[in-house]
Length: 194
Figure 1 (tube, rainbow, N blue to C red):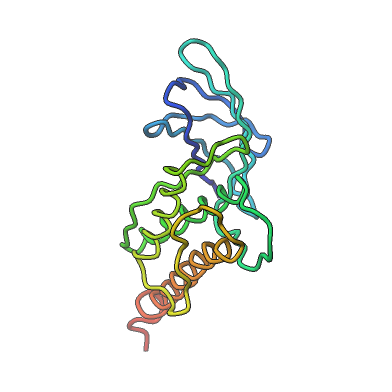
Figure 2: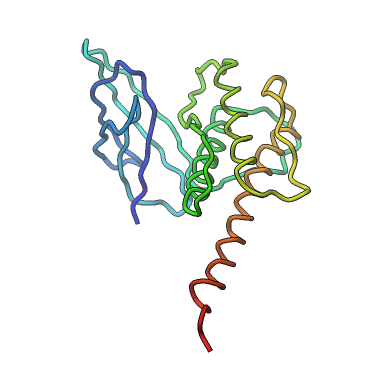
């Protein structure tokens, strides 16, 4: 099964080459600053992306990014801090859930950043977008009465707030799965059978 992998790079980039999980792939420009390649899907939905990006002046920049597709959520942490890896993992989960919602006709206007690097400055605009994407997903679909509220912002994020971010996504995914199973049971498999 194939998996489409997308990364957002600076607008000056005109050519990209690289690999995913050690296999050379062809990247193509598929949207504003978005470069996409297709690779074999992994069992754990984790993709190590190595990119060599070139701009018009011939400057080359190298990126090594780990992307998480599917759900790899943590809801039971008892301390620690939110890293670039956490932001990418949760951003990938947001994209995955947004894609699942759209399959059933639900819409959430999200654009999660999937390629935070350790050296990236986590500025207010990026973190506001992060919380906005989370809220858009939560508001696009029904959630449990026990589903926590998102944090107001990412300033001084506590481990409880970090758990809550991922719990919201976990709950939405569980409800989509329930809806999908109910749909298959009522409309696809057993409808009209006697």
